[in-house]
Length: 255
Image (tube, rainbow, N blue to C red; front, side):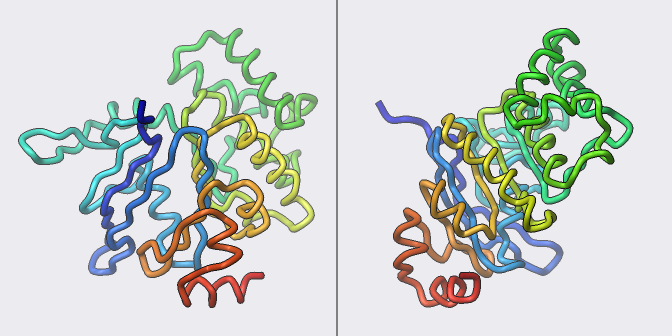
């Protein structure tokens, strides 16, 4: 039996005004796989990631998540954008972690984790608290549940952001350069949490500049430049023996 891809993007285009950002991006991510997107700034990686959960509307092509068209319905051979409420329902199954933590500063750590499950997911307060505590334990912050974000380090805040995304029990996790805003000594603790997620079988798409993480954890590495996929394949191939001159030039600068 053929497994439906968790993510299937086909010929995705996106422009801002007259500036093309994505120029026909296609890729698939199977359930349980980790795909790392690498490439120079401005290559379209983060824009593509935001298109996957319809934070950005695409101009052409199609994106399916879990076998369902993302952000649109198809009728008469044409795509029609879904109402915001329907898009939000789709997004509930996709967790996203941004470069900056975007925690609610006026809520405690535990309150940050319980808000969406109770308000959006209809989970009881008691169950949401239990789930939140389990997730805080998973990211090593159970003892900080009553703290406020301002009382945490950047690495701790990002681990809370990951736990908050997991609180909705998503089938797909998206990470947009989750360590880029952190001091170097705090990067490892966030990558450790992401490794444990990968080990647990979570499907993940990660925009990253951490080549060691991509080499260790990714099933597929995708190198993007100029809004297109230049090269993709297993880490040993793309990072260890890149075939395209542009990939080789990029890796020579970041290693």
